[in-house]
Length: 154
Image (cartoon, rainbow, N blue to C red; front, side, top):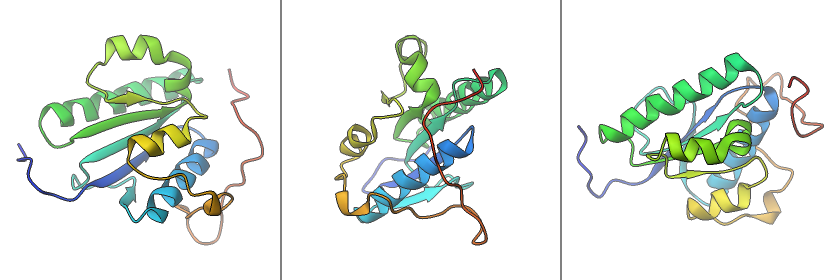
């Protein structure tokens, strides 16, 4: 078990689901970096003490993957590896009330349109000068372009 001390906060963004979620995670990543915060995407190390999971809530297999990932990080929080656990994305947006009851260890749930509230919870400002900017997590030769909100696979 890790001991809680004076370690600096580091945020790991875990993205599940479609390319729209990846774009949303990249926007969050950009906003957090713009606030001077230490942030990683899909880190395999256990060096981040704050985790934000961006979930899918439409396709059954993706919902199951989202639930399993949340539960894995709930276990990490219970073991003292993670200090704070936040969930955003479609699953959180659609099933927030049920999930809050089933997984009370999660610190907060955010819908798909609650980026400013998520940033405020992470003690970051929503930087208007970064709107339209994003740090890419894909290889340099491609990037996704988000042209709509929501899922067409209900």
